[in-house]
Image 1 (cartoon, helix red, strand yellow):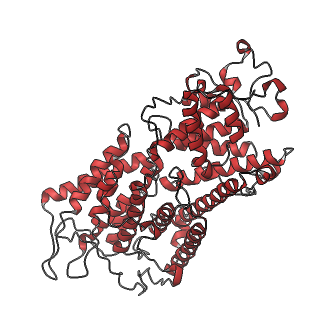
Image 2 (tube, one colour):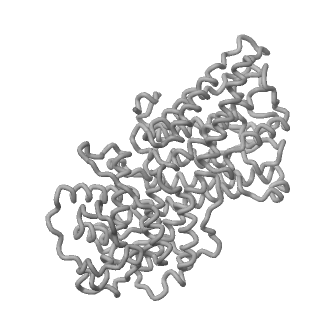
Length: 560
């Protein structure tokens, strides 16, 4: 598909208003004069623009392979850096502008933005959304999808969630969820582009939902779109190996999003009436089946892993695989509000805290390598981890000393705070959360080893007030960032369940240590997963996987 201009596009005075120009024009509708002439030598500004575009295709396009690279480069060659300063843009120019804006965030993350760069992307959300509402086409859907991807990095713009909601509804209206309508009358290459557009919307929707603990917007019922595949033109291209690698990455990410969605709905969003009817054995079987799928996904990813030579790419690297693996496990074993009150958890508090530690450590490796995007999704993923640490701290109020050493999470809590504090200054919620999490790290640090068995450690009145203030503020921030309906923010429900199970709800005179021992009646497996004992690949090995290579014992100061 080539540039999109009116038939009289050479006459600027006759161009229609901006909203009307955000319309789709298929290749057969283009006038021969609309085909761009050979590109002139790039000016300095054009070279910088090309750097932004290349960064997009080296990283983001591997996860969302819906943008036509040839079409983008054709528009860039003909328009150059003028796309950045244009007061009005047609569909192709808007696409290039958003691709550059997203590529710029990739270079920022990798520390590769030129020191002399003065580029400032001012994304006009209202104008883009207005064009989307005026015209229903795959071109406007692509533009809106790019806007949704960019909005994850822009706390001052529109929220990503409602944009994704609009995308999901429009994908259904345009028939992108069914092969019969997505391919109707189109060439194989254009039909494949529609397939990739659908799966990109699907993947983004699932990622946003899983990170916030919310239901998805794009219902997967009756979908029959094939996974992204290579076209004849791509197969015959000298870049066939690169296209193949990109599509393998995209497919593996789609499987990840499917798995996140499955865990979210089978564990956290299951109907309460159905949940009550589940026996402890049923719950263990569900968790075991999901755990098997998680292990398979990780193993398949290791076969695709990148050598890591390109620091722009973040997907299918060992550190990325480990971070996603522990994120899946945390999602699987995260305390669920749909679990019947008083039932034994699948993991003890100590095991849950250890799992959260490994999640933080894996992301700390990525942070040190400048592979962790500081965007809204990453911030959302940090809050449930901090809530786990807070939950384990509060729930440990009824235990006593004399057992094995407690799980010390002070370093990991501090790492969470430092990652939040590393967001740019205009991410105010991240910095407010960093201050609260630092307070949590200080409070956790008030715990002391017990001098003898049977002794206990009591909080002072001031410490109890301090603890309550931290819990209240962190819960408020979690609600603001994740949403009121998030399944991850229900600390009070967890405490009620702990009290019903007889663990204790004392506000004072209680231990501040985590108890890593299995609860009575749990299995004697390596991690005592409520009677589950995993053999071979199913063993819950809480040591960091290969992501610890060259990581060693790290301090967050090494990352900054």
